[in-house]
Image (tube, rainbow, N blue to C red):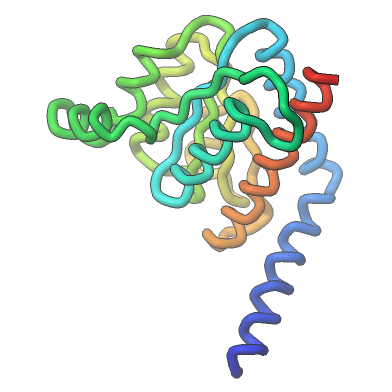
Length: 192
């Protein structure tokens, strides 16, 4: 297969995976997630989000869409990406171990009425699972973004979007589409 054929196949694979997001159960899950985030912001609470690697980049992207803007100039919405503070991450990793990298920060920032969004393409990232377990103890509503199986996250999260693929790249492409859907609808419903 030459480069052109490889490129066309990768684009086609991405489109086919995203088409699976049109299934009723996927749309219903996305709608519930959007509605919960809108409710949280209307109640003057915040979203806290985390992930590792590419999922960390997605978490940072989500936070930027909320704090800055998506398509319209509007008031900032509070959102903290737990991977953004390198000093905290490295201190926690050094003093408590990497598995506590998100839970320790969640302990510091989470308040009643907030939402915690956990992103893991496998659904099994230990530091993400530890943060989800703590969120449940703190009575914080949890949302997961993961792959088709859901991993361990599926049974821990209050709502879990399971991207319709087990391939990391396709899963992440669905997650970034989900981020844009949320950003668009949050802006429309809150800043009508």
